[in-house]
Image 1 (spheres, rainbow, N blue to C red):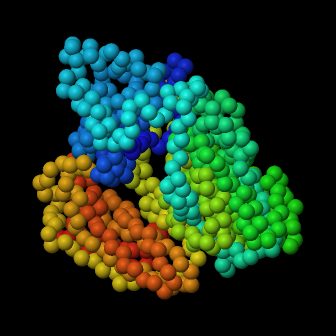
Image 2: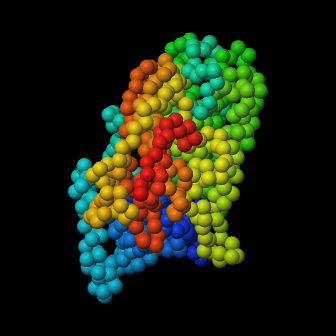
Length: 601
């Protein structure tokens, strides 16, 4: 069963959980207005509810000073009433902080053991004394049991063992049929952001030099349960075993910016998995070297390694770590930047591969003349090395695109967004994180301030080129374009009328190069903002189109009423503004190739 999380506005990890030491309520409150929550933070959850997600997990922190899991506005009001969600509202682990209030606010399922005292036996008492309606308890049980009938593919009592540390029958979750998906997912997560004079793909190199701590696999993978670092994605990170337990206790911890003990395949936290194997970059390059007759030179320890003068290319493997429970200390680490600069000072063909858990700044070395290619490889999982070699040697062309902006400097994102809010004398253990930026985050903010990015949202190179042509735009005669949505029932995903198609946008994409590759055509919309504050350009669709050399394909995007609407807080409704809507199709938010528009009067 798919679970959407974490609901909602869970934008910092520091002080997300109340203090475990009896020092008072130190859970941060995410404070945001109605327009911001609808147009930005609720938006993906609305998509997920429309798609039929089975459960929504509420987050640890407070929203507008009420805990997420007992916040009736976001649970009963937004999720279950406005979006028409029929599934389970569930807590994150041990995120139940009260009893009947949470149940009445719309919570259906509490996970964890230390907070179970709030509900164990007390829901029955509450029904009997009238503080909880029988219908609410029935609704909670119905939603949970209904999910079993809707999604279960196994019998009760089978699957994951109750206690992994005790003897139990081995249960394998590996499916041979998933191998291709795991591998291709790793391939498509790589984003090529620099490739001078077709440095990549490599062309039968005789000597390759490999550098950087991220090249080999971590020396140990030991999934022994509990809060072991090996269960939480810290295999490559230089932290003690009790570090992971410490962040659950909300200790003041500093997260290492890079994982120096081996290649990074996943971020840290409870969503990490123990891999069946790890194909590290070094493993995969050795296999390819054996096949091609290439001589490898490697040094994965030194910050200023010796250079083999005969190398056709030098690959530098670095990473940028992030994890649940602890906010990052920065967006780049100096040790890794120095390593890249030291190699580039000697090697005229330096290729940098970054395994990054989120944004990683690159301006310390990106313009160095000897840095000829850069791949932001993200977190590829267990097929990391194989996927990288697949791309570097041209078995496939890169097709990943950036789901964020890479800025030139950290301050470009906005100083208020760079550091978590912490308790102080003014907040008296009730830290307040005020989302004063509203909807202006990432590319919306940089464009509003006319701040040029290093690499734009949606950007990514391939081994070929594409042409865009034949923009078409048609309005539906069958759909109302009234200011307010016409009357319609609320289904999963909200008012049915919000999903009516108002316009259709089309274009033709042609591979104008000599390599087969996939282009990601992106649709951006500009909503009239004379009356309503709206970013000048917002992503409203994308389509990945594989094309052979010389081949063309048509792409089409449906624009719904919701895509073109803004939230009117006074009316508490989505409204369709009057005026000119700009429409653009292109390769990134800063590379719109075709532009048009239409007017609603």
